[in-house]
Amino acid sequence: MSFLSYETSQNMLELLHINTTRYEKVPLSSSLGRVLTQDIVAAFHDPQFPTASMDGYALMYQDMDAPTVTIIGENPAGSDEKRVLLSGECIKTFTGSIMPNGADTLIQIENVTVKDGKITINEKVAFGSSVRPVGEGYRAGDILIEKGTKIGFAEIGVMAGLNHVMVQVAPRPSVGVIATGSEILDLGENSNNPSQIRSSNNYTLAALFESAGAQVLQLGTVGDNKESIAKSFENALVCADILVSTGGVSVGDYDFVKDIIPRLGAEVVFKGVAIKPGKHIILAQKEGKFIVSLPGFAYSSTVTAVLYVLPLIAKMLGKEAPYKIVAAKLADDFKKRSKLTEFTACNISVEEGEYFVDFEGKKTGSSAILTNLLGASALMISGEEDSDLSAGTLVNVILLENF
Image 1 (cartoon, rainbow, N blue to C red):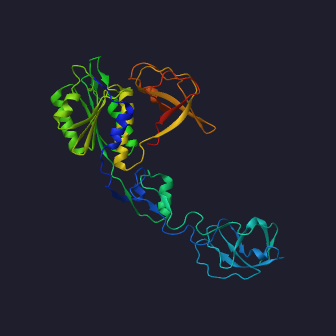
Image 2: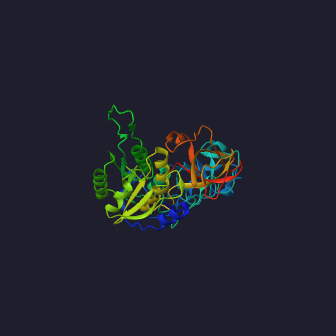
Image 3: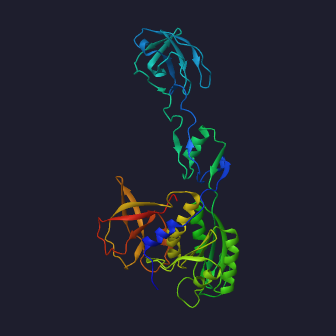
């Protein structure tokens, strides 16, 4: 069996046509974690008028050397101040208040002494001190948040300031997750068969896809039976944009998934990629929906889900990238285990703005060791052309956070 290179498989994935024009509108208060499908553009300046940034006295800078300045009133935040200051006058003005007409500087309360309705300036300030100029935050027409952005707390705050009651976002792609294999025992099920193992793949992947912005359909487990698997796949494709299965993709007598996919009328985009772990991955397409069949080992299925399912979810959401890849420096020597493109669990840290990779606590062995992804873990990429790498070498690393 021949295998595609990792780079070729990623190029083929990128070229898949996916409809990204769909959108829905949700209340701002329900938009956390959703992905914008339109730019958020400022309709006005922020602030729209010169505004006090501290509590103090608004006055003309030319009066800074006057022996005293007369207080002619107060200007609380939110008040519609109409008075026009003259030379020798000041208005007590509070944080967030519009500066009175004629005033160009605000002197803080702690810089003056108040007596008999007048202030004496004890410590001078610069021209324009403590005054937010028009457009300090942004100006009308500025693109403040680009489409494709995942909405977080700051985005919600900015949109609230712009009075966005409803927000236009991408619909969540629906991803159905099925674990195949007669050896798989679902959560809550009991068995006296010691050869069975507890299912974790479908729960791991469901959490991964939800964190990436998808809506997950947890479809449980199905044994190594061709008709049962085929029926489960058919049912899943009715309601899911992406069907993700684990197990049954290798070359064993009971690996039925690879044979079932063509029977469903799906077109196989590629089968087999020269990567470790997960070289028997299958990607297929049927009428605008996708089937991604992953290996059964826990670490292997998780890594290949990151590499091949997260990009599909990102494309459906209109995001530019499914994850972040950074350059990092090896803190330890690295021994490459194969001639394939390898994705190795590692620890990632930042020191003085530079990323570093080490392998402390990471176990070597089969592709079943999911505990290697606990903690501040990442995936280090070593290419087909790479051999053993020495400490200090720069490598590319996939960050497993903030999908």
